Image 1 (cartoon, rainbow, N blue to C red):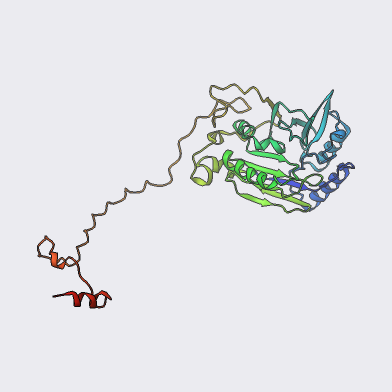
Image 2: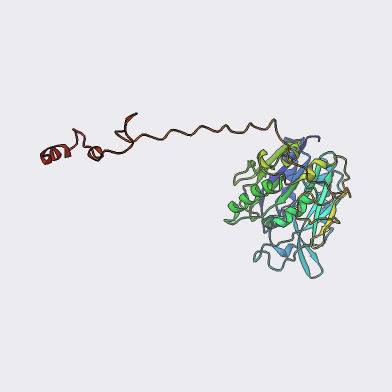
Length: 354
């Protein structure tokens, strides 16, 4: 796999005015400082804030503006999410834009965070997409990660990197950071968790590796978070297991191909790709490209097996006080109780003797 650099932009989000121009300014600043970045992720509802009154139909002018930004800088762009209006329904929708400025897919949040998202409908399809020579990516929005079935489905479809735009400004952020780390460890994937500021959250974005380690955690101020990896740690962690001691939970990682198309695929939440086994079992689902499911590989053994522990001979039992070698085993009633000369009872015992 070739090196791939991902950046997250943790910025102040306003609920009163649009934030698209501010997002473009920070994207320009990011690419000027870190020109090697190849993918940029913003926080949930970053363009217009958390008010459903700003819902728009897709495609729209705002999405076209993001397409121009992605094409100008030649990066993959996930500009957070926006409220989408479809007739009388409203969805929380995120777009994925490739370096050519084309929208490769849109994802609707499956678990709206009520009551804060009252009136927002739930999506029904998962979204995965491939970056050539890099790996497979999946999209999940904020509260979706609280339901492990969503991440289990994505990783069963071969996802190695989970992009997770967030809008969390409540005390649950501490719990959410724990969930992000647990998600990386349980499903052995990278988690790119990007939160906003102001009306967009309380910050503390993080990047988690497949062993559940937080590679970076931001503070509660604006930050340009950039990170570069070859993603080989994902496959290396999936083969021996989490931290090289847990059982392998994603055997399909050993059978992934590096030559993939960039076409995004959407899978309904209520149906699954054709496979002879349950989607909840790791390594059971066929990849998006239609490859047969990989068999669960046995855990590799590192080095030779340790020799069996030697059995120690039984320790001799302690001798009874006053018993000497060669003496009779029958206890002497006269010597069964002894008082030391220095004991306070010695004087009492001497006076009581005949």
